[in-house]
Amino acid sequence: MSTKQSAPIQKIGLFTATIISMNCMMGSGIFVTPVELSTMAGPAAILSMLFVVVAVWFMAMSIARVASIIAAEGSFYAYVKSWAGHTIGVIAASLYVLGLVIAMGGLLGHVAGAYAYKVLHIGTPWGLGLTILLLLTFLNLLGVVISKAIQYVIITLTVLALLSTTIICFFHADINNLFPFAPHGAWGIFQAMQVFILGLFGFEAAASLFPIVENASKNIPKALAYAISAVGVLYILFVFSIILAVPTHIFTTSDMPITEALGQVLRYGSWILPFINIAIVTAVSGVLHSMIWSSSSLTFSLLKNLKSPWVKNLIKNKVITPRISVLIVGIPIILCHLPKPNFGLIFPLVAASIVTAYILAMWSLLSTKYNKSVITYIGLLTAFIILLSALGGAYIAITRLF
Image (tube, rainbow, N blue to C red):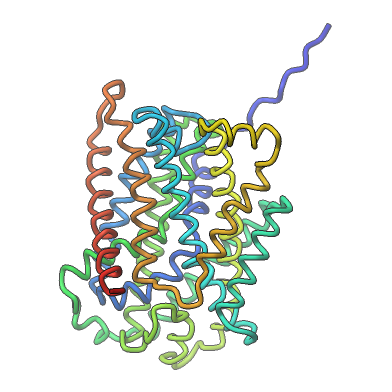
């Protein structure tokens, strides 16, 4: 009598793990940040970006270690539950999902709509953004999964859009645009941190690669370090090139497409702008599709862990299913897509929600049963600084409403 053995898990190496880690971070957030960074801190935003890249490196190393110790379904819920219990675990996971929902509906939907309008010239940017969000939610509801081949196309288009814009901007650089270097002083540099970190969110997803990476305890931290360094350098060059090429006064609105601003200063190379618009629309749509899927998956996992008999009964009777979780996430995303978003409030809310989840997850490493690490302490310290930046930004935005 023979027994059927399951096929062994195919392991991946350091290079592949690094590419996957880069894919997790190479999202659309970077396309919405340059205008805010320029108006908030001026050329001094480069200092904010350098700090955030270093901070994210320490946070990534810490969360990767958490993932290696607590290999359980539910990510942030499982990480935080290990030291703070069920309730705080639910709060941490809920804050993470809340941040993603606000980012998708309040920010990325507008990015997709603004660039789609530049390509199609029909309707309104808000209407096109709403259409994209509805379509992507519907595709996730049907269980449509983006193939690996399409994911590679999307990441390629994202990199090409970044590199093309960077090269064009450096050819049109004007050193005079660097002055005044810090028009809003140290406060502007501090506030800009909450904006730039949006472009690096996603590194936490790479921490789940431990079961499939060869020599994971050594290669996952290396992969994250290489990925964060590469993406950080690319992003910094991208934003800095825009600051060099485009005077601050050209950015008339916070949601102004980068290519629209570039169109006002380019002496040559303007023919490539329509292609950059198409690449950005494709990249944003692909990232939104993946984010809707991942956040709905995390939401379903969270609901399964709730102690409410009512919720458990709904799951048992298949009233709440993975597909229904898509609606649970998708409807709030669509509701967050307001005609006139307050970016000054949305940026800090997204940063505060997700960074708080990071802090709660990293705090599990301070439990007495784990070895303490200087990396964890630095990761927590830098995360708290970014959180304070976000809370300060939220306070200013709220006070301006009244």
